[in-house]
Image (tube, rainbow, N blue to C red):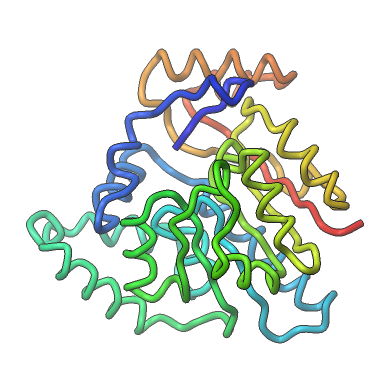
Length: 273
């Protein structure tokens, strides 16, 4: 999880980065549970609406979805299965997970998800530099295919490019800072027909470059799809102060939002004009 302070060089690695790419998700979700993580709850509802809308507009029963900067796949998981964020977070409070092996966790999570109703037959792809997290998401049944690639530095592989050519929807949960402009440009350039893109940036993150890339690819951007919603609690006073300063720098009133102790986020939706 990265805060964006306005330039590509100014990135702050948070306390959660050391658990972002482990062989299974329990430490990450326990940390998110402790921090009051809520973005996926609000974002997934908007993502599901966008999924239904793009199907209707394009006359499709099944679409290809990219979960960009996906990590363990919480966005895809809540879009694919009839479960809630609370279902996911409370699951890992069980003491059984304290000493379970990675293999046991993966097998248990795969079994758990296999018993949940799927909301459709859509194809879900995960893209992230976190290869371990992606492998977990694939192995438990969240992703149909995963691509541990750094699109900010290199073009997509042939295999990824072939998948992107048929993508209808790109989702990104948590921060448009992950959607760095070069990566976003490479992703969209590989798409035969432009997909809808829906993302949930933290207020205060510098979104200008990413939004300019979306516009350059012929996508019209709606910044008011949902009201502002809580992301997670701050790790401490220093992180809160940075968030307040960043949000105010971008013209947001932080009273009742960042000033009260939590990051806040909102939904941006971009689709072909």
